[in-house]
Length: 140
Figure 1: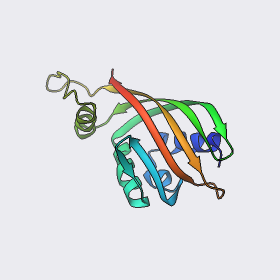
Figure 2: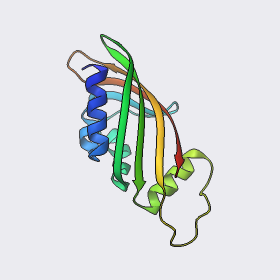
Figure 3: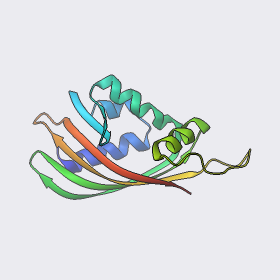
Figure 4: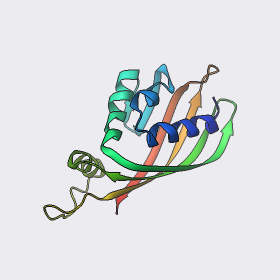
Protein backbone atom coordinates (compact mmCIF):
# COMPACT_ATOMS: atom_id res chain seq x y z
CA UNK A 1 0.00 0.00 0.00
CA UNK A 2 1.22 3.48 -0.78
CA UNK A 3 0.35 6.64 1.11
CA UNK A 4 -1.84 7.55 -1.89
CA UNK A 5 -3.79 4.27 -1.55
CA UNK A 6 -4.10 4.69 2.21
CA UNK A 7 -5.37 8.26 1.99
CA UNK A 8 -7.95 7.30 -0.64
CA UNK A 9 -9.14 4.48 1.66
CA UNK A 10 -9.06 6.80 4.72
CA UNK A 11 -11.29 9.26 2.85
CA UNK A 12 -13.66 6.46 1.79
CA UNK A 13 -14.06 4.92 5.26
CA UNK A 14 -14.48 8.31 6.97
CA UNK A 15 -17.01 9.67 4.49
CA UNK A 16 -18.92 6.35 4.55
CA UNK A 17 -18.74 6.10 8.37
CA UNK A 18 -17.23 2.61 8.04
CA UNK A 19 -15.55 1.69 11.33
CA UNK A 20 -14.93 -1.94 10.34
CA UNK A 21 -13.42 -0.82 7.04
CA UNK A 22 -11.17 1.58 8.93
CA UNK A 23 -9.98 -1.10 11.35
CA UNK A 24 -9.28 -3.46 8.43
CA UNK A 25 -6.79 -1.03 6.84
CA UNK A 26 -4.23 -2.16 9.44
CA UNK A 27 -2.22 -5.26 10.23
CA UNK A 28 -3.52 -7.28 13.17
CA UNK A 29 -1.33 -5.32 15.59
CA UNK A 30 -1.18 -2.13 13.53
CA UNK A 31 -1.18 1.05 15.58
CA UNK A 32 -3.38 4.10 15.06
CA UNK A 33 -2.24 7.05 17.15
CA UNK A 34 -5.15 9.52 17.21
CA UNK A 35 -3.09 11.72 19.55
CA UNK A 36 0.58 11.48 20.52
CA UNK A 37 -0.47 9.74 23.74
CA UNK A 38 -3.40 7.53 22.73
CA UNK A 39 -3.01 4.46 20.54
CA UNK A 40 -5.46 1.85 19.25
CA UNK A 41 -3.43 -1.29 18.54
CA UNK A 42 -5.96 -4.02 17.74
CA UNK A 43 -8.84 -4.44 15.31
CA UNK A 44 -11.39 -4.09 18.10
CA UNK A 45 -9.71 -1.01 19.62
CA UNK A 46 -9.53 0.73 16.22
CA UNK A 47 -13.15 -0.18 15.41
CA UNK A 48 -14.41 0.97 18.81
CA UNK A 49 -12.57 4.28 18.53
CA UNK A 50 -13.79 4.82 14.97
CA UNK A 51 -17.42 3.97 15.91
CA UNK A 52 -17.83 7.56 17.09
CA UNK A 53 -17.78 8.50 13.41
CA UNK A 54 -21.35 7.24 13.28
CA UNK A 55 -22.26 10.40 15.20
CA UNK A 56 -21.16 12.52 12.22
CA UNK A 57 -23.16 13.43 9.11
CA UNK A 58 -22.45 15.18 5.80
CA UNK A 59 -18.73 14.33 5.98
CA UNK A 60 -16.31 15.77 3.44
CA UNK A 61 -12.61 14.91 3.56
CA UNK A 62 -9.87 16.23 1.30
CA UNK A 63 -6.16 15.47 1.43
CA UNK A 64 -2.82 16.14 -0.19
CA UNK A 65 0.11 13.72 -0.08
CA UNK A 66 3.18 15.71 0.96
CA UNK A 67 5.81 13.00 0.71
CA UNK A 68 6.24 9.29 0.22
CA UNK A 69 8.76 6.50 0.64
CA UNK A 70 8.52 2.87 -0.51
CA UNK A 71 7.03 1.93 2.89
CA UNK A 72 5.17 5.04 3.99
CA UNK A 73 4.36 8.66 3.59
CA UNK A 74 3.07 11.92 4.98
CA UNK A 75 -0.15 13.76 4.11
CA UNK A 76 -2.18 16.81 5.04
CA UNK A 77 -5.91 16.20 5.53
CA UNK A 78 -8.95 18.41 6.10
CA UNK A 79 -12.41 17.21 7.10
CA UNK A 80 -15.72 18.93 7.75
CA UNK A 81 -18.83 17.30 9.15
CA UNK A 82 -22.10 18.03 10.86
CA UNK A 83 -22.23 16.93 14.48
CA UNK A 84 -25.21 14.58 14.71
CA UNK A 85 -25.50 14.15 18.47
CA UNK A 86 -24.94 15.93 21.75
CA UNK A 87 -22.74 12.95 22.76
CA UNK A 88 -20.24 13.62 19.94
CA UNK A 89 -20.23 17.34 20.68
CA UNK A 90 -19.38 16.61 24.33
CA UNK A 91 -16.61 14.16 23.28
CA UNK A 92 -15.13 16.87 21.06
CA UNK A 93 -15.34 19.53 23.76
CA UNK A 94 -13.58 17.27 26.30
CA UNK A 95 -10.86 16.37 23.80
CA UNK A 96 -10.04 20.01 23.12
CA UNK A 97 -9.87 20.90 26.79
CA UNK A 98 -12.05 23.94 26.21
CA UNK A 99 -15.32 22.71 27.63
CA UNK A 100 -18.62 23.21 25.89
CA UNK A 101 -19.11 26.51 24.06
CA UNK A 102 -22.17 28.51 25.08
CA UNK A 103 -25.30 27.18 23.39
CA UNK A 104 -28.88 27.87 24.27
CA UNK A 105 -31.25 24.90 24.62
CA UNK A 106 -32.46 23.94 21.17
CA UNK A 107 -29.58 25.63 19.33
CA UNK A 108 -28.43 23.52 16.39
CA UNK A 109 -25.33 21.39 16.78
CA UNK A 110 -22.28 22.90 15.08
CA UNK A 111 -20.43 21.91 11.97
CA UNK A 112 -16.91 20.74 12.84
CA UNK A 113 -13.75 21.51 10.93
CA UNK A 114 -10.66 19.38 11.54
CA UNK A 115 -7.29 19.95 9.93
CA UNK A 116 -4.29 17.76 10.41
CA UNK A 117 -1.40 15.70 9.17
CA UNK A 118 -0.90 11.95 8.95
CA UNK A 119 2.28 9.89 8.96
CA UNK A 120 1.82 6.30 7.82
CA UNK A 121 3.95 3.16 7.52
CA UNK A 122 2.82 0.11 5.57
CA UNK A 123 3.86 -3.53 5.20
CA UNK A 124 4.52 -5.32 1.91
CA UNK A 125 1.05 -6.93 2.02
CA UNK A 126 -0.62 -3.52 1.81
CA UNK A 127 -1.68 -2.99 5.43
CA UNK A 128 -0.85 -0.10 7.75
CA UNK A 129 1.55 -0.93 10.57
CA UNK A 130 1.71 2.51 12.15
CA UNK A 131 -0.40 5.61 11.49
CA UNK A 132 -0.02 8.79 13.52
CA UNK A 133 -2.21 11.84 13.17
CA UNK A 134 -1.84 15.35 14.54
CA UNK A 135 -4.87 17.59 14.26
CA UNK A 136 -6.77 20.58 15.53
CA UNK A 137 -10.48 21.32 15.37
CA UNK A 138 -12.93 24.15 15.60
CA UNK A 139 -16.70 24.42 15.61
CA UNK A 140 -18.52 26.54 13.07
